Length: 461
Ligand code: GLN
Image (tube, rainbow, N blue to C red):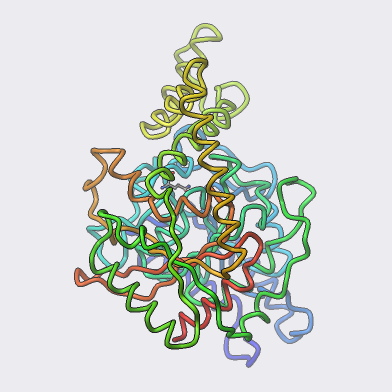
């Protein structure tokens, strides 16, 4: 655009035509075609004045269907919110718009961001563009496929336990989950509030860094948002420093890890060490506790967060109720899907008198241990390397019969959410079955600069 080669309108037309050609992938819930074209035409009026451009001038962005955009539908891919329109925009969305981005549509996901395969959506499943018989990952499957298939330049997702990194891994793109509190959660439909974080899908680290620098930072509407000023993430990519990198031998010896993923990551670590980084094994005894701790705590938080959908204030209201209690039960029974109901029930159970100490308190203790151990590791290391997933994208239906099987696939991603640290999945490898897979790198809370600097070297290298 700066060279005058094309206009914002042409860029939007390009993506709209790709969205039409790839509609069978089912990545989009809604395409804001007319509006995106109008916005592009308005931006084109300042095409000759680059000094007036925002930092995301003409960048076409898709947003997960759990992120509010004023006067646009948002459904959390649930029948519960069918026909619901956002009354305000998420802070992240407002910041994108202030910097002249163009929002092209909302993206399909697992209902209320609960899932790892995008098979739990009222709008139907999303197909992985590299192999349409396989899942794109979840819960932000639509956000991943939209970037994977070139239907928008970058997209936003949300990551409570891996929902940005895992689908990015399955689709062969970059998925960044910043530290907890780096990006405001205002306008993000809540799943588990002490874990939820907006994340970014892109094909380059430069794009992820630029979008992060726009949407990160303090926000009066989210008191858990970090108060620190936003560093220059793009500038930090120039450092290319040598880093002290920790890895957990237990994570590479885990029985669920695919042998090809294990050897790819081991080989990559050998290359990194030759390139001047220091790699050290660190003992980590909690690997088998983190998935249970995550599912106890997140379902507990979800059971509380989702109590607002009662047929009175929000969402679906049953036509078959004749008094208040049946209005609640019928509205919730009709509005929520199976996985969401399972989690509300699990969450209510672990919070109930008599079981609270056995489950919820224990999970809190584990979380505390993980936070402490992570802080100790980062006292003498800059980064931690782990696989993103134990196995690459699976086929539709393969894991939907056994919920625990699906949950165990979150082994490597939930760690960063329990600890509140930043993590990125980098698309570095390809499996002999043809599917891509990534390497996960983590940095201490609020230290995305190191993470992105290292990532930029890896993705280029
Ligand atoms: N797969 C995880 C789950 O089902 C992660 C979800 C998420 O990060 N939103 O909870």
